[in-house]
Image 1 (tube, rainbow, N blue to C red):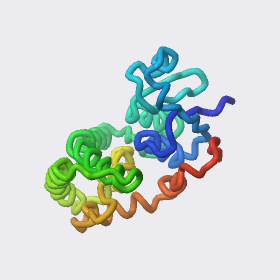
Image 2: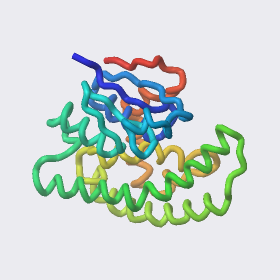
Image 3: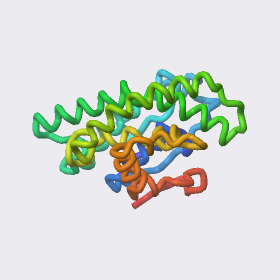
Image 4: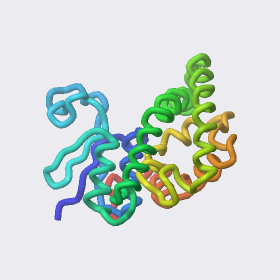
Length: 216
């Protein structure tokens, strides 16, 4: 049987999000490095028309957009894992939580996190206005998260779902450097530290040093 191929960059945030879900479900896969200079070429655009990473090739089935990929992986390789609940009310709570991540977390954590990443990895000057503005908005969003997580273990209820994993890897980026926003609110801190302690997340630490093929 062909091994699922993940086309991306080992240190890229969205590539790592997909890889974390693959590790979570112990799905054998091959990480195929993409030369970022090639992503706007006609050959690459045949696979990803927006010229972005990552995309997957699962035995001839190609798919792009990170969250769509993760949903496909969970439905195909972990239908009983609970990462996408099937009971109607539980599924609705999952979709609610996934929408919360997409609209109330990602826009602000990504902007703040990428500023901190540029400073840490490339020694670039931080755009303090971008950083401070987005951290302030994120802080207010996490206050609501704290209320939600004060009533339940995970964002969609008492079991882990993709909605929780979708927060990786921007949550660690947003709390890097001197900033520790993910540990400011107690319930958020408990939830966040549980996520980053998961073997599926730790399996990909130091991804720039791992072999190209990651197999179980």
